[in-house]
Length: 223
Image (cartoon, rainbow, N blue to C red; front, side, top):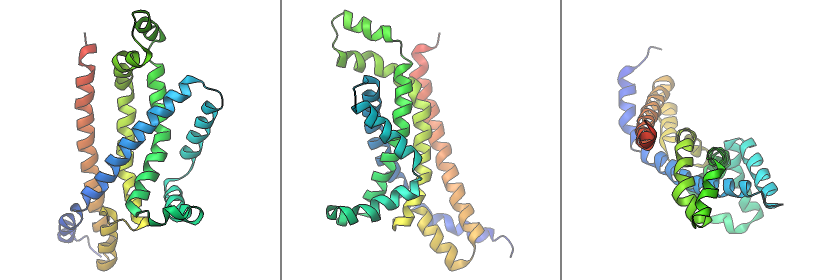
């Protein structure tokens, strides 16, 4: 069978309208994962007995479990144990699964970024009358953000790509639509190549935006 370029062109408008679903899941999961990851990083750095160990177990567990297994665990497994989850939607289950897994990776990224800031700066802030919360918000976090941004950006790119796994739960996103089109036309290569090009373009755009943000944040540090 020859490559059908004309058919591949027709795939783009049919699947691109589902891009918003993929991006909305990735953005929602990234926001939740960032908040949870920062909390986990702060708890781990606090060295509170028992709580620190529990956070370490959480990070180890969610970093080890494949994303597909995790999605099935939340969507199909939880309702079996907790009936309250019977009504959970596939999109909600996907966002929860994505955010919990990536929060484990972000926790380590944020922890490394926080540790990269000299401890003397916190002591200096406290010595001039600032509270610990003020010290973190005004001095520690801005510097840690600069070091965490590259890793966090890669995590967001990972989330965009992993959003394709939501089709296994029945979510109508780009890959789900492409899979149906490929099965109906038998033009598998053309269909999946079109999807690959769309993801590639999205990642390029996100990478460029990340680079611009990094330049803006690094501007005060450039001599």
